[in-house]
Image (cartoon, rainbow, N blue to C red; front, side, top):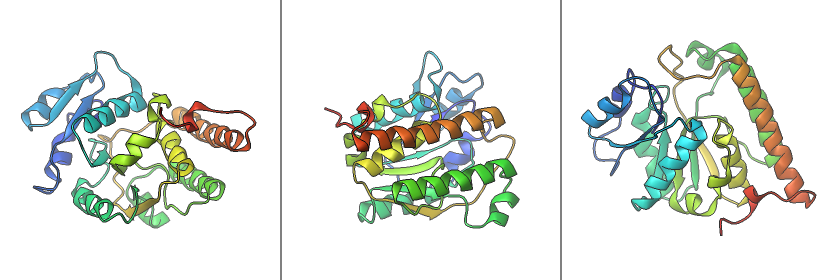
Length: 239
C-alpha cells in the first residue's frame, strides 16, 4: 500500500481484505501529514516511513523492494484510499497463482454509465478512454484500462523489469506496463467497482494533463528504443 494522507480510508481498505488470503500487508507512508502511520500500526500492518516525500512512483519502489526482500511470490499493490475494492485481492492472487497471466489489473470501466455514476469526473473518463485506446493500439494489447491503482504481479515480473529506473512521479505506472509488454509478460484485467469520493486521492486537472503527456512520451521513448534510434535503460535488463 503506497500511502499518503490516508488516515480516513486505510482502515476500511484493510478490513475489506478477506481473512487468510495475504501473508503480510506492507504500508509505505510517503511523509503523510495525518494519522496514517498510527492507524496502520494499530491495524498490525508492516509500516515503512519515508523521511521525505518521494512521490507516488518513489513510494511504489519502496513497496516492491520490501515485498521482494520478504520473499513474496505474488505482490498486490492497492491504494489505501478505498477507491479500489480490496476484497478482490484473493481472486487476483489465485489467478496469478494458476499462471493465467503474469500481471493483473483492476478495470474500473465496464460501461460509461457505471464509471460516471461511480463518481469518475467526465474529463478523467474521457482521458482514460483515449489513452487506453492509444496504448492498446500502440502496444498490441486489449486491456479495459491502463490506469488502475489496483495491480497484482508475479514475483518474476518485479525481478525482471528495471522499475528502479522509472520516474518517481505518477507516470511510473505507465512506464511499468510498457516495460512489461517489452519483456513479454502477459497482462490481464478483472472488473472492479468505481469509487470516487472526496476522501480518495486524485490528481487535479493540471496534473492529469501532465500525466497524459508523460504517458505519450513513454510510448514514443519505447518506440525509439525498439527501432534502435535511441536506446533507453528502461528497456534493458536489470543487470
